[in-house]
Length: 312
Image 1 (cartoon, rainbow, N blue to C red):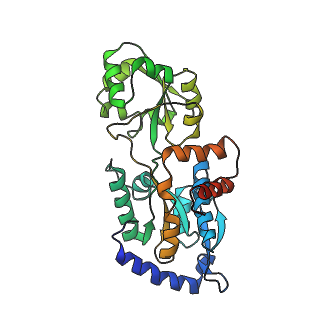
Image 2 (cartoon, helix red, strand yellow):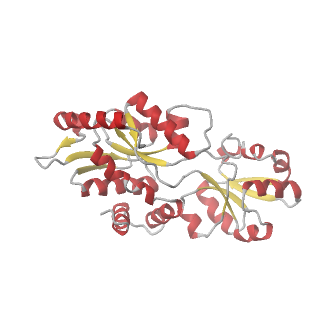
Image 3 (cartoon, rainbow, N blue to C red):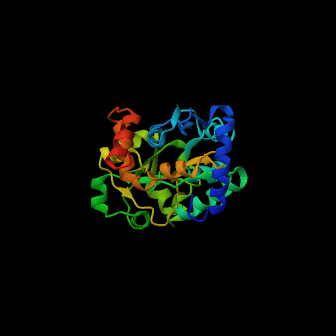
């Protein structure tokens, strides 16, 4: 949601008042005489989504709303359908997912802010759905490196990796899950985009495994490089350097809360929007790690973080 949306704000405020009277499907109905609403928050079924959803839940509860927790509802199709059909009032979606899988766009947009704006505009035009502020972090693919290997080679960017592979004979093993070998947005397209496709075929060996196992494999030097996700807590756990995607090959996956314009009030949007600027990659790895590695409750992790940031 951007600043130049006065027309949308007018629509949102009027629609929200009607929503309070109708209470369709139990979503965003008025609770008693307090002015608070009953809000349904849903999510996808993995750690980061649980944390993000609980951040929204705690902020909305603090504003006086009653929140029904439907986290873990399913994948993007289930949550998107629930949002459109008034069965959910908010869920966090990723810009890259919305662009490629919901809007079915093939043209790649490398700049994260531009991608966010394109997605937000399309959702508003097609479905009157709004993207609130996007989080700072980008949960896209990253290439992680064994620390000792990086010290020996000096490779800190993918352009430097390309030059290293073209100019050195040493073989390099890189971990990835099987589908990444041929996907154009992954290993199937990366060497060509960085100009070392021929050298990669000769000197780099893809080692297939579940992506969750790649972090430990890289840390143990079973492989020198591996695909990962930028906010996975194992990057921090094993102190793995990320090789910078200096040419923006990987599409951005910035998450933002998705809501219905006709129901979500400007006050509710302002409340939820406060958390997005606080969520950079390092912060999200830490929060994810508390849940995935330390077995903490996502609701407790979210509440403690919001308190530490002065948002509760």
